[in-house]
Image (tube, rainbow, N blue to C red; front, side):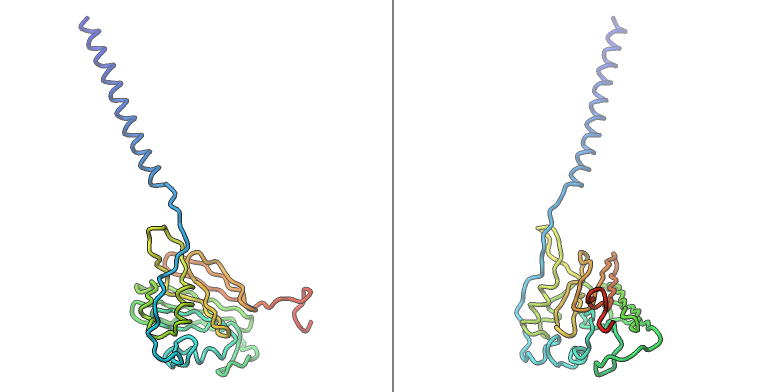
Length: 237
């Protein structure tokens, strides 16, 4: 009888231990399931703000302020990358042109360059093969690479400021605030702005095709001059 009682206790203990282990396993499973739960995302842009620029003619995008360099770059039939927090404009130099914006013939070689935008800002590495209509700009994010509208609020007219903010679109969860990188692609001829964020893959911009490849600490922007063919031929063939 005593042996039977001991056996019954052992059996009961085994069942309880088994239930405990099962409960622990189930708890862990539920935790993992909750971690993997889908969180919907939505398109967001930073909040619009009012421009504090007193003279629209000094707008850093459409105006003639010497510090912005856009008055110079607007002469070129080309694309550029702008680091907005430090307002640094990088001409992609997809095609050969002189200082006045006139297209020129082959130069016989490519060009490589390295440029920083200041403390905490982005770092540019450029590879330009303008004889072939190809340009690549690699950007390493700096510590100060999250778009801050206050840094351009005093330097852009209301129209350009609204256009810049609208181009800073990102996808994030409903409860999160948008934190776009401070980079945009600009068409020097039309002054249209194009987002360079994690979800952007590329654009057709007039006679140019642009590929965008984002990484954790930077982004690569490749641009090609590829005008539309007419019956499979380029003009003049």
